[in-house]
Image (cartoon, rainbow, N blue to C red):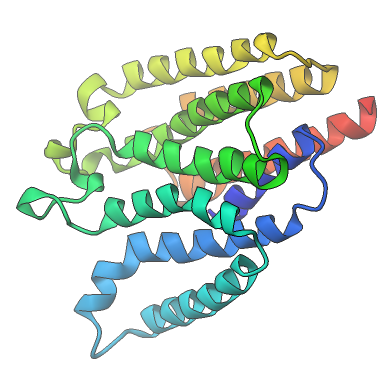
Length: 258
């Protein structure tokens, strides 16, 4: 997951020819490890705080080390960049910590889980890195942010389908409300919108067109290949690798077409 975030950040830098962004890439990578482990393992870690299993001990050690490295790279960023990050850090905290009535967190609020994730990832992989490098969002960068939001919503759908048998009905996820087939149709419409938005850019290159077409097709194939019963690594490896595939395609297109 952290590699996926880093790949999406790198895609943003490559698309807009932003140089010298490695510090932010490392910052996002290690921050993603910390955030993911916080979201996924915080409650489990509390349950086993006295007798941690060997795997939980390793996860805690990884989280501590990643936190130290995350803070290290954070000190190399400007104060403005940290300020830009704060809303998305807050969303991550509210996603996990039960601060709402009836001890709810954002994750348990019906119908919004996938969109909270998409907003957070869009902020970290497009909005903050662009503000970090450019200081403001131009028209093409705004289009990129909208496209990134749509893209992340779609690649989250296979996870929602996978978890259909485990999620509480109160979550009202998209597959729960629409069913698997209609969820795939919905995701396909979102992907077509993602692709068509490319035409609205002020600066449109063959690299941008081809890389977007290819990643749209690949995402469609994974979306329609998703089922409630799937192999252990279908989502956890293959779907999570889609951003890395996108980065590879973009680098290849840029090397071929300049």
